[in-house]
Length: 377
Image: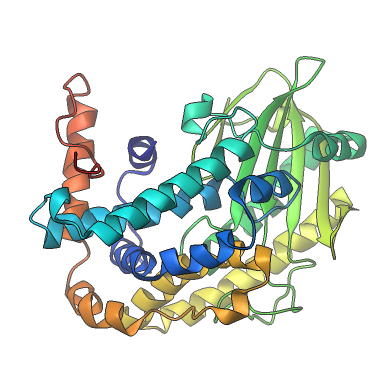
């Protein structure tokens, strides 16, 4: 699965953020602290229970947040083995090895119970992201409305603005955005859904320290569903949908929009969506000015904080978010921040880039050196 993610995304570059560098700091923070956090979560709810309660509309526990539950921790472990253990997993402390094994077991139980396919990833599910339960699908179908091409074009433009805003607020990451589907319908059409959570609407706690903007979205969550005829859609494990043909507005036959008020899903009028787009555009401009005024250290810490703070999606489920320290730990700051003030890539992650490039050029060669270090025999 991880290879598919890298092949899809290739190198991560930005004119604003040192993305590769802050990702590495965020990964090492995860390796430093996530085991203790998830022990508290899984002491209060089983992976199976959390999976079943997350098969609903606008759940923050979804394909992307399930993917990074194992991915960040495993990549940081790989970095530690590569940089500190002479590239030998056998030199990894036994306690950390068993923690990794436990983390993988809990993630696997969560993932295989979340996806309707029974598989642990979108990639293993034939590039489908199918998890909604019957009631969620029924709600969407009951609220679909016929649309014209002109309506679709206008709505897609508004939702594109929400996409850009949500992406920037997470320091150029997709953590607020998830696409679902394709769900086959009786008439040969497909149903696909895009959802956004933790948007800034001026109410409740700030999701990230910089989230507050003068421009406020009409609600903190938004879902947009649409049915397509004569189109295909594939998905990946970072929550991105690709539709063929790419210019599919004329193929959309119906749409529905919704948000949450308290614990209840309620409809949003399609004519209300341009207001989301306008607010998102203004909020994005404000956020850009905030980030443009930061130096490299501040941007590094912002990106790493966004990655680390993402696991509040799990602590929120059991009511312990306020008990967790969401700052980057002093140990990580002391050990890793100085290096990434001067470098954009960790040597261990450069290794991954070279391996993936080789796989692009020579995909027929057998993999002799696993991307992630296995447990020693």
